[in-house]
Image (cartoon, rainbow, N blue to C red; front, side, top):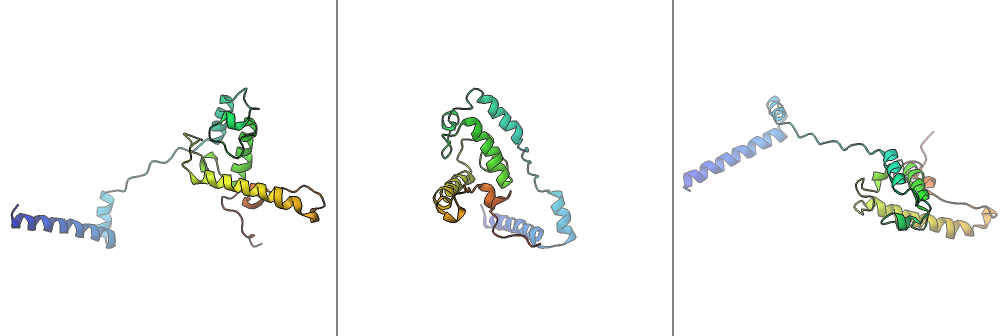
Length: 171
């Protein structure tokens, strides 16, 4: 390659770079018109997760095994492995999902519920352990409750939101 060819190639590359900079940084009608000629790709929207249908499918798949321990019926169940499988589905659907205002896919992969791909799954496990400690170790020792059984659950703090409530909304 001759020096003249290299110079032409460098000039062409510089021109392309300058055009890219103009498109990005110059708010002119020309740049807007050109940008419209090369539209951004539209991301494919994810299909909405149908939690009711997914749970119905799972219930159908475990028919006859609802009273067996969840850890024997499902893969990768840690904290609630001794709970009956049918009850685990209700706890997940009404306890976890409704308490945080989410569906199953907040913690689980829709294609593989046993997957550890989402960190929210481990967070939920850790929060479950924390909840058990508060209910069992702390509330149980509070004499001021006068023997009444007090419990803490997801709704106690989350109130239907992913992040726990840390203050009250003004009136």
